[in-house]
Length: 292
Image (cartoon, rainbow, N blue to C red; front, top):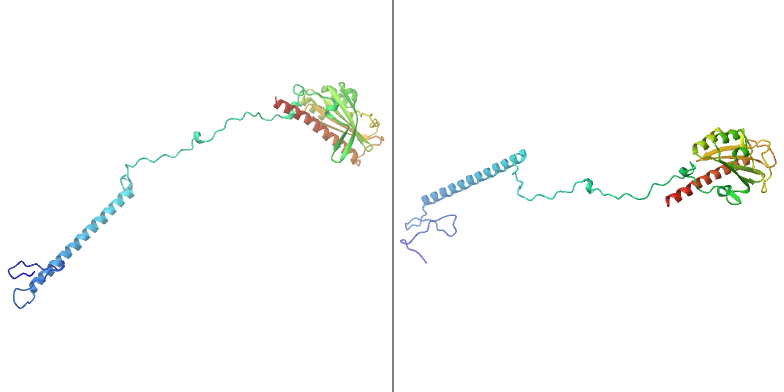
């Protein structure tokens, strides 16, 4: 469809597609340069306005961001990018006394000390004899086997002691003295266990004993008399309410010297065994008391 000169004319806009350029109304079809210049000026103003306007918007945005950053850095404004209307987070459990696992107290009593039961006559009530302390017919210590001889039991402690030991046992109130003899290869040893009412008495008797006093040797049951005269080796020790002594020598009557290691070993073996037996006595009574 075409329009004549009398119809509506569309104004040329370079920004609109398919718009017509303005021409002069003359017949020579020469472009209207004045109109073109005016249109170009209009376009340039529009671009400057858009550029200036965009710069203002960018400046405002930068200024706003800087202001927010300043407020956030100072920390004076609690609304600086942190929502305040959120629900409170669940608090973590603190390490209070309630959070520490607890355990019920145990009902097990503390272990009983065996020495407590052999330290006084009130607690040490188990049956006592030479046979309970030294059972059987022989004794093995390491690789050595000792044959058991005679045993004896008396309440008159001084009657089976010699030298200074008589007075030591008497003044410390010895109530009983048990004896047993062991032998091997011509060497014999008599162990004497003196019984007191308290640990203090036994300890004092041990400390007061000297080389001039000893327990009388006990012969019999296959063992010849020994240490009735001459030189023998003696020892003294105590544990709990018991003081124990050894008298060791040759059944031949030979004097003991420091080079006679067999005599020393025999006496030491029997002293060690006696200590163990007294301790076992305490352990047995402690165990029985704990199980009651």
